[in-house]
Length: 379
Image (cartoon, rainbow, N blue to C red; front, side, top):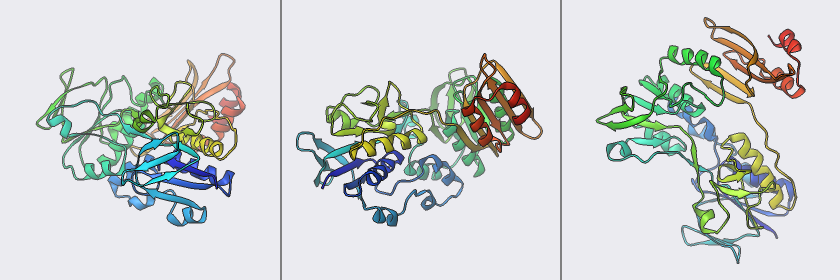
C-alpha cells in the first residue's frame, strides 16, 4: 500500500491529507500534528482573547479523521532519511513513507530583542501565544498595523485593556487599502478606543515603557509583534532540499526531491511565500493530489481580504488605481470605493462597514464590469 505522510497540522497539511485521500481511496495517509492537537483556524485565534472557546476553532474532529481513514500522529518529525524514505520522530520512533508532504508552516516574525524587552516580547501565531497574553496584565503595544495586528488590538481592547498599534508605515492596512480608505479606517479604529502610532519604529523598551525612535513613548506590559512570518525550514534544510526564503517548489508543489512536496507558509513558489490561509489551502490540495499520483499544476489567485474588527467590517479585492468612484459616510461608518483601469474596467474594490455587496463585487471584478455599469449597479 502506498504511504503518504504529511508533516504539519495547519490548514495546508489538513488540505493535503484530505486531497490525498480524495484522490486515492486506497493510499495510506498520515497527518503529523506538531502542536499535538487537531488542526484549528489559526486566523481566528485572536477571538480567544475575548472569551471564545478554543475547541470551537477545531476544523475537523477526530470522528472526521476516522471516517476518512486519515491517521493523526501527535508528534514532531526531527529528521528524515531521504534514501530509505524514513521519517524519525522526537520520541525515537520512525515510519516509512513513499511520498512526503512538508507543511511545517511558519513562526511569527520576532525581532532580536535583548534584556527585559526580550522577556516581554512575543509574536502572535499559535494558541500558547494567546494563553501567555491572557496571563499578562496591563496595557499592550501591538507592533504591526496589518490584518492580524488590527484583529489582535481589537480583541484585546474588548477586554478593557489599553492598546496602542505601532505601525511603521504611513497608514494602516497598507497592503489592503489605498490612502483614502486607510484614513477612513483609522478614524474607525481610534473611535473604537484603540490608539494608533503611524510612522512608528520601535526604539527601546524597559520598565514597561516602549520608546519609539522619534521620541514618542507608550506604557506597555507586553510587546505583541504581528508583522510578517518566518517560514519553518529547519527540517527541510537538514534534508538537503533547495531553499530560498522557504522550500522552493515547482508548479506541482514538488521540491527539489521527487518524493517530497511542500505547501503553505513553508513553501516558496515563483519567488513568493504567500503567507495566506486561502493560498495554504489551495497549495495543500495540489500537493496532496500530486503526492497521490496526479500531475496538477497550482494556479495562484489573489483572494479578497476580509476582516471583522474595531466594531466594523472590511472587504477588499483587486487593485487600486487613480481612476475611482467613492461613496462614504463618516457618521454611518460606511465606505465604498471602486477602482478602474485605463479602459474604464473595474479592477478593484474596497468596502468598509457595510460589506453586503461583496459577492456582487467579486462577480463584477471577474466579469470586468464597465465603469458606467458599476456606477449604476454598485453605488
